[in-house]
Image (cartoon, rainbow, N blue to C red; front, top):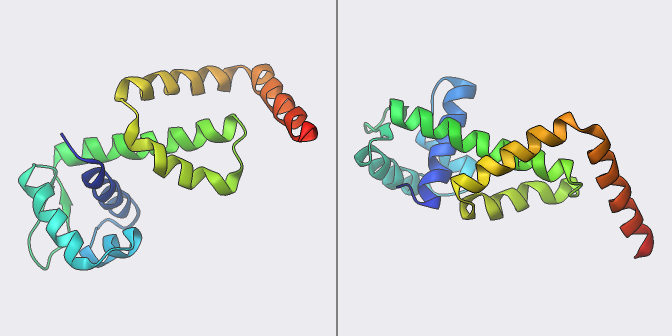
Length: 141
């Protein structure tokens, strides 16, 4: 089972590979605001766990397991961002809020949030009511 730290690194590796075709230690370090040595250490751990193939001085490669899990992690992040936008969380808070909660939700909870996001996407009236309620709360402050 991947730890929250492993998930953060794996998510960034996946995003770099999807965007650029390669994930370099230096790029992942910059994205996570950590030292390259931290990325190397985690890459060795992810390699040992079967998520990536790590060879010194080469780009990081995802295994099938790593690709599938990385994709799932990115989807989780995107769904949580979408959910928070739908319910009216201020845009400047969304990224930090997602980072704060994404590792603390079970995959079962994520399945339910996915269902809720899909249902809200099909029910514009419900979303409109949420917005009205939010505006009314702002007026009462």
